[in-house]
Image (cartoon, rainbow, N blue to C red; front, side, top):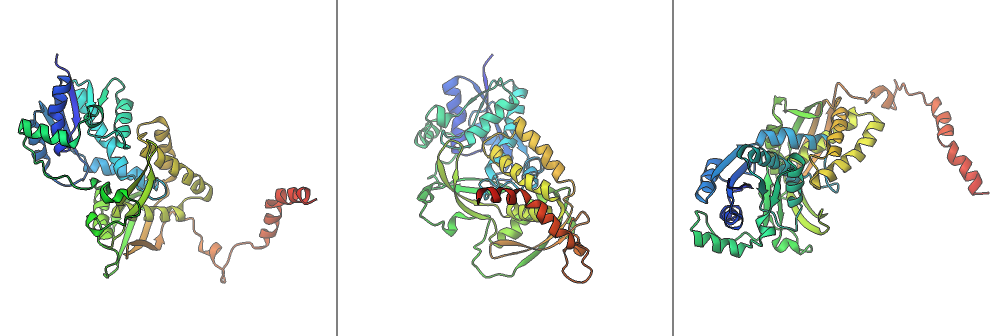
Length: 397
């Protein structure tokens, strides 16, 4: 029986050429799998037909936008996930979504191998392969660009020699990855970290320096899930899409950073994630109102570790699953409304309202009606600082 390889297919030059390339190098039949996580671009049916025209024996396409939003973006919102305190894991979240579909296709078609188009320098090769073996340990993984030195020049030559139905136009100077949660731009002149980004690289966001009217929005959460925008019910996908548009129009969500890649190198990345940043900002503030102090403090430690695990391709790991349980429990009382002003590149919280609030006006106020027992504070301070006082007597003797 002929071996079969499932290929993560984007519809572009590299993965279109990879269909024939893999067949020639391995003698295997190739099944192409394209997954829509809100990256935009061509129609899925067009991509499916191109894969078949390039030599795939089967081609599957999946509209996974709602799945991506509900099962991958939402946990990141609940975790306030920002890698290195800035990056909302745009690409890292989409990879396990795609992996799940690749593994399902491999089982369906009896494939022994899964292939992807990553290089050997980035994080995505790890995210794909660590995810694949976590779901299907018996599957093998190959990466033509990495494993067979399939350079762009070779890809173009192969495409022209085989007369494949795909344009071999000049490559963009940037490497771009995008989905509904955000957009990542790297390489080209951005590799010189002294060079400032130019407006031409942005698509999801408008220039925040341009004068425009501010936009006020109210986001409603239930158990940490965004369920309404300005009082109108939304799905998680719709919440992200609407805030991409509204926050993006105000230039919110631009991030220019040098980040630590898993493979050990530092990389300059420019991100746009207007909806993600707006939602995480709102969620963080609602947690400040509704989550008890010690739980909130510990959750911040969990959030950092959760983000590192996801960035490092450990979405399906036992630790990540266990932390999900903690994060979901911590979100049980994250209910209510957050009002934000979107303007000038910033999402600024201006109001909070929750039936689950731990904010007690009568305890917080300094005016008449204050119910806080200030007389108890002196004894509290004496006991709280007692160990330091004893140590100071020893150390200053």
